[in-house]
Length: 457
Image (cartoon, rainbow, N blue to C red):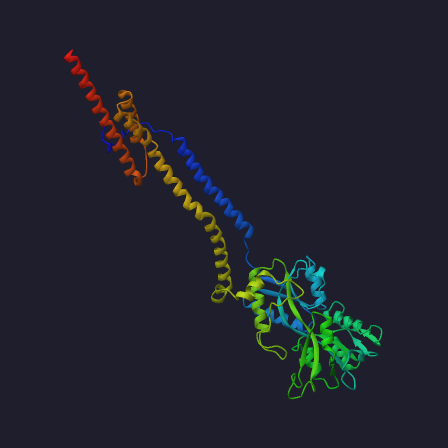
């Protein structure tokens, strides 16, 4: 029996790894493969592509409020490398129809509050309310009107078909049973309606636009054109949930010219910026940032910070918009250029699920490996201890026990383990040599006893 620190002979045959070793290796490799496949699946399902570099927005007619704001969005987005194509339209209803057509190519649009029906909302999300849109009824009459029924017998422009103005005008005329009471209902709107009113071709015209609309400001400054006071505004607000009362104090439009010349009560709605479901989160964030820049300042009708806002509306607020209104712009977008922030977000997006999936595997595989290394050593402890107990009890065949100890020692000398486990292997071999010495001592005593017996005989 050699000392436990002896080295195995170089000519010792290489043994095929034991079945348990192959099983442990296979289990470890299997865990890594399963974890990698799971990570790839999660990333594939949740991966967010880079934001598009081009958007299409459906705006209103040239010279109108929607078109004016769309051009401002265009300038803001251009600073971030996003090209916004602005397409003219008949108005909010036309914008909504384009959003609902999958092949229209339109990504976003301003939609007037109150025009969407339940069936119009599928697949569309809101990025918030952008600005107030009062309903202006301008007239060329000797005295300003105080009631909508006073439109009876007048030539009235209702707005272009496909516009939100046209629908609102029809709803109000229908409410007061005036559909057939006006002398003529002219389906023109925007700049064309304003020009017809100034020329005297019509007596009244409906407009739905912000107070910053060039058409509205032009009509306020045109002599002979009057703004209608909606004296029963409270009744209209209660009849239509999307309407709200808007007070226009004397002189608020132009204090120098004292426009309007009296306090005026209006009703109005708000415009929502609407896009398709699946709008890229970065684009949603850029659009809301642009809206804050364009609409966030105080106006004649709203305080600073009133718009954009996340109040309930005709369309559900997108999840990205909810997060942005609640938490604000993230630190990456505040301190990094757009391209850098996007790539950092994408890298983090990949790393986090990978770490979440691979961390348990990375932790478990070394544990499994250490358990296996110790098992390769400790599996012999039981047999060595069993032989020791038999030797101490004086039981069993000493020669067979000695032969088995030599076989176990040969196995241990051929065993390859990492340096970290040398101590445990050395301790086992030392124990084995101790049992070997005990067995040889027992055998020696037995032989001496037999020799003495023979001598006595």
